[in-house]
Image (cartoon, rainbow, N blue to C red; front, side, top):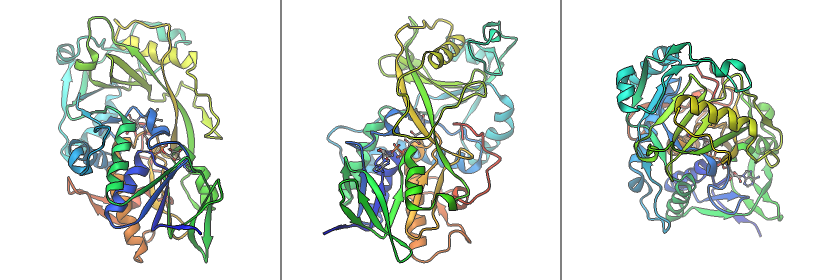
Length: 435
Ligand SMILES: Cc1cc2nc3c(=O)[nH]c(=O)nc-3n(C[C@H](O)[C@H](O)[C@H](O)COP(=O)(O)OP(=O)(O)OC[C@H]3O[C@@H](n4cnc5c(N)ncnc54)[C@H](O)[C@@H]3O)c2cc1C
C-alpha cells in the first residue's frame, strides 16, 4: 500500500516549510519530506537570516520589500501558535558602505522606484550613529596574506546608505518550525528522517517518490526544495540537463566574535554591508557580532560535489580573513583565539538568482538556487510558486506566457519568467550573495 498526497515537497527548510503552508492554504494535501530529524535543520539552521532589500534587480528588491511585510506581520501571517514561541524580527536597520557606484547606479534608483525608505549618511552622521566604525576605505577587498591588507587606508568612506527597516530574524530554525505548525494547522503533513531516493514517473508525468526504506508515496505534484541538494534531486528526476540555469553547492563560513568592550552591539549595533572590505556583519545574541563574507574575488570559492561530504570545521585562513577585516572596520574589536562560527552550503544558481519554476517533467517543480540570499523571501517565494503551480496545473503554458503574481502586501506585480530555469543569465545580477 502506498500513501497518496496532492503534492510532495522534498525538503523542510524555511522555503520548503513555507511552501507546505502556502499550498495547504490553497487546498492541496501536502507532505513535506526531509531526511533530517526536524524542520529547518539543513542550511536554514545556519542562515544569518538577514532581512534587507539591496538587491541589484527590480524583482530582487521588490520581493525583498514584500518580505519585510510578511516578517512584520508574522503572527497574523501564521495564524496559529507554536508551543516553542515565535521567531522575532529585530529591525536594527542596515548601513551599506563601499561600492557607491553600485548603489548610485543600480540599487538606489530601484529603492526610489519601489518606494523604499533610505537616507544617505555623510561622515559626520556616520560618526554620530556608529562611532565604533572606522571609515577607512580599503577597496578592493584583500586577504591578510597580502601585505597590502595591512597598509593604512588610502581613502576615507564619505557616505553610506542607511535603510531603517532592515534587520534579521532571531532564530531561523524556530521560524521554520513556526511554518511547520502553521502548515499543519491547515492540514499539511511532515515526515522527518526519510530520504527521497527516487522520483517516480508514469505516462510522462511525475507519479510520486520512493524513500530510502522502500516506501512509495504517490503524488501528481512533486516540488524540489532540497536546498544545496537541489542538483542531486534534479538529476534523480532526469530534468537537470534540460535546464538552462544550473545549481551548485558553495561552502560558506560565518564567524561569531564577542563585541568590543564597552559596546553593546546586540542592542545598539546595525547590520553593516561592507562592500569595501568584502564582509557583512550583524548583531547576534549574547552581545556577539556575526560576520560573513560577500565572497570577494580574492577569496577562494569552494564548490562542493557531494553536499553530504564537506568540511564542516572553521578554517584558520577564512577565520583570519573575516575577523581581521571586521577588526579593520571596528578597530576596538579583540580578535579571540577561540574560533567560533558555522559552516554550511549555499545552493547557488549560475547567476545567483533563484529558480522558482516548473520543469520539463510535468508535475515536477523547483524552488532552488537560493544563492545564500532567499531566507528573507521564503513567504513570497512560496506564495508565488503556489500560484504558478495552480496556473500550470490548470493548463497555463508558463514557458510561453509567464505567470505574473500580484504580491499581497505591496500590490507590486512580479513576472515569474524572471525566475525561469530556461532564462538567459541575468547580467544585472551582482553574481554574489547580494543577488
Ligand atoms: C551560511 C548561510 C548564511 C545565509 N544568510 C542568509 C541571510 O542572511 N539572509 C537570507 O535571506 N538568506 C541567507 N542564506 C540563504 C538562506 O538561508 C537559504 O536560501 C534558505 O535557508 C534555503 O532554504 P531551503 O528550504 O530552500 O533549503 P534548506 O534549508 O537547505 O532545506 C533543504 C532540505 O532538504 C532536505 N533534503 C535534501 N535532499 C533530500 C532528500 N533526498 N530527501 C529528503 N530531504 C532532503 C535537507 O535535509 C534540507 O533540510 C544563508 C545561507 C547560508 C548557508
